[in-house]
Image 1: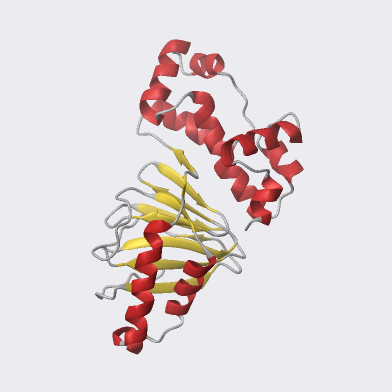
Image 2: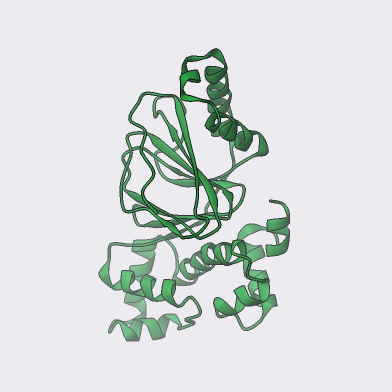
Length: 253
């Protein structure tokens, strides 16, 4: 699928809706002068922004500030929209984050997407944009991300875990595989990722579990893909991270 066009005008908000009905959508690394919301309408999206992998399951969006290099990926049978927002008009963070999208915000975005461009100077367009700008800063932030690093050794660990999330090697086993002491490995992960190795791997499992579940995998299959000994252990991890069980999480969406 080809890269969607990037707006080059000064519109306050511009929305492009597309889908990946037959193939995955996988954009190359790029950036925008506008801020961008990556919002799945059906299915889910994965974004990589400045050494972070961000997940956008249903009813969430990834916020990408202006000028930040990033990629966007949607799996097949997903419908999604890219919302380009003029950076001077809404106080959103300078760093990427996942926003919990309310039904009102979702419908505002879809409504703007369906406006013909000749209405971008109409009073209705400005009223819709003003309401969207009022609502966006109030949205709840969710940390649905996995930190990558520039360190080549940890990047190797991250790539291994991304390709095989069921890998359950311990800290000592990972340290040995990298020819360093357990203490040195622990310090390296803390310095580069800002968390312990256990927390780092759990964050990856949260991101991947949301991806697997949104693709239609059962909780049982998802727990197996992530290498958990039992469904109960996986559900316990999920609830500790997101406050509810996987079934309840998606039921709420």
